[in-house]
Length: 81
Image (cartoon, rainbow, N blue to C red; front, side):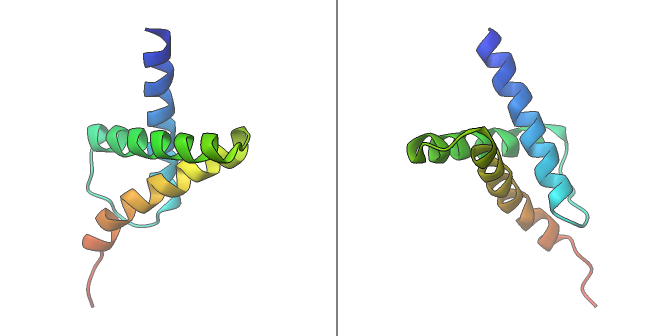
């Protein structure tokens, strides 16, 4: 149960930071933010673990992947003038 809660916390942190990094309006709720964070955290962990990186490079990779997953929501809802 402890690893589940820490994984959920990591997903929330990665999802929220990814939404902050991507400027603009993203019409996604809490559940989608957590899911994006979960995918970003897992993929970034696998990449960082395979490359033998430490905490901070792995965390940065997780944020970049999360931001790339949030980006379509921001692009799809921007004003078109």
